[in-house]
Image 1 (cartoon, helix red, strand yellow):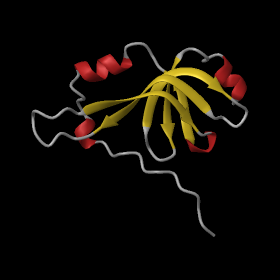
Image 2 (cartoon, helix red, strand yellow):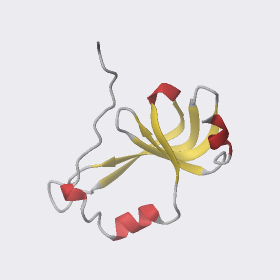
Image 3 (cartoon, one colour):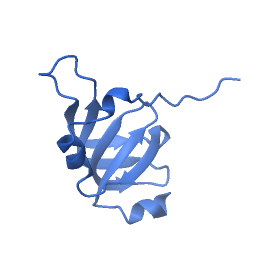
Length: 108
């Protein structure tokens, strides 16, 4: 995995954690355990608005942020304009979507 992250260093990435959080930021560093350091990180919190004056998306600034490797489910580069396209469509289709459930280890 570390060799795949090499090409994304200093580029914007999107991380989905095992507990279902969506975090985007610039990949500043990583190690062999897949611990990630993101700078200018933000958490994207999607919610169904209860009224018309509420937003579907809340951006929570995190700054310099470390994500432990055992909490990383997905790492992806960000296609240019994909988030703007979501916002311009007013998040159409999100009202029928299900949230990502946390990933847990099976207990035997």
